[in-house]
Image (cartoon, rainbow, N blue to C red; front, top):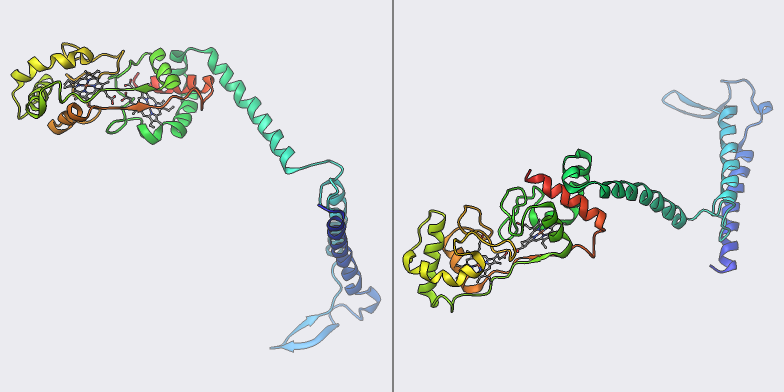
Length: 294
Ligand code: HEC
Ligand code: HEC
């Protein structure tokens, strides 16, 4: 800010303050002007109502003087006179920095304390679980839902069915590194559309359902799936290949959903959080997620 504008602002500010002072002094009614309290009116009348011309009460007047004195002192201590920084050197930026620093000290201490406990211990600490839940709400609920029950393509985190394992370590690894579920399109490997129908019928039969294809023929072709889903179809957590024999489905249990998996493949992506969240925060969220299925 140039000196001219600084002086300009100071002049306007002081002009206003002293203007108020002058106005107070000028309109003040001297006690000797008052004839007798209650008799002295301004001379107009409306429906029998008249306006008195009494002096302002003393305390009221003093309040005005006090306000003016206060503003002058305030403007000396805090910035307000143009570019003059004020005796305290206060700025909104340095106040903000101080607040961030205090908050950092408080919260980092909490997270450092939590980091000393294992995930199992934290999962039994209601305070830590609450903190984890809030972090979950900000970072995870968009995909897994605010109740963590998931939706199509986004796994339910509250049950005991895990793509990659539900141990504290597995959950933490999932959060730090992210996960890429990768099933390639298998339509050629099963021999086209009819093959897909047959395999789908076999997959459905594993969880007690039936499809329109020939499950017996499908069973033979399931060999190509077994590399990932296992010979028994119970899945493989090292690859994130889901168990196909239970009633929990990531993409739905309809024949169409299974044929679609075979035809197009499936590619679920859980983002990595090591860049966006501190290790201490990941530790606390892991405890929250772990607590959900305990
Ligand atoms: C952009 C969407 C998205 C966000 C955000 C997200 N996830 Fe995921 N998450 C997924 C998907 C998709 C999968 C499944 C990956 C797959 O299919 O292989 C997954 C898988 C997981 C798993 C593994 C589940 C299992 O059965 O093994 C856990 C645990 C998990 N997420 C927790 C979290 C937590 C905690 C957060 C927040 C820090 C989070 N996710 C944020 C999409 C997301
Ligand atoms: C290369 C390993 C691999 C092979 C081979 C493979 N899958 Fe998968 N499959 C996966 C993975 C990984 C997922 C989970 C994808 C995800 O997380 O998005 C999956 C998901 C599925 C699903 C969805 C399950 C659900 O819960 O919704 C079905 C159904 C399925 N596979 C069937 C098959 C069939 C049938 C075959 C054989 C024709 C097959 N898969 C071959 C790795 C494989």
